[in-house]
Image (tube, rainbow, N blue to C red; front, side):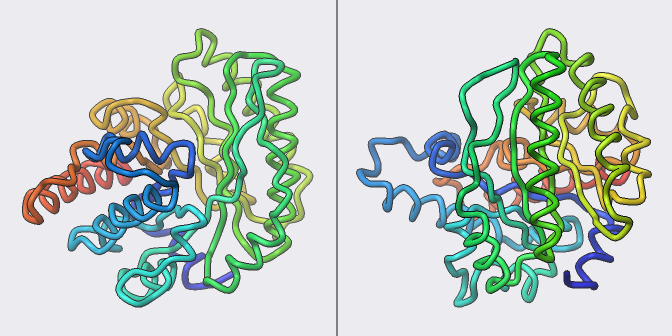
Length: 295
């Protein structure tokens, strides 16, 4: 673990930019950016276009460590270059922003009210690559759709099992058991999930550090005890489908949580904007999300 990056992540002001759309979510990200499916024919062309989009964002003048602590990357992005450097090295050396890698392989079908992660069969390979690319931490996502105690227990167990392996390899894992914001029993799911998380945290060695990426809670400051836990470096919020305005408003009501937004960050960015228009829109988004993260 890079000690300078760890200190910045633990105590720095700012938020995490989520730029980790993978194969399944990339077409939607490109559509929102103004590039439709009929503008590319192959997966390679699609990934080239999304890398161009991410490069434009990351190299943009307002995308700096003044407001941004870290950026979450897709594996392909990690293994590509920006201005002659691998993306993780560019982020840290040129921008002072900590690189994080998405490591999950997608989700299983709905069972017991949850979407478990598919087995990460290539985790060792991904972590080896991440070490070579100077990556600080990882992120993996599963989803809670309803307040099913069995399903939620299984999701938390799976996240912790992978998290331990990742931490033992020298990275800081971000566990992301997302609760669907449109769930009818969202608040109850959060209660069950937090209880399971706190129980498993008590079994961790003192020197094993995790982070959590969670849906903005139904009850303000619901995760305050998790934020203060000695094994927790940071608790970050996902926007989960909220508009940027709503995601920012909800975040200001949860002290100690910082943002890790994707849709809310990229909202309003378009491929045909001039550089001035693009940078101005991105700057306004960054400042709004930053101010909510430090409130």
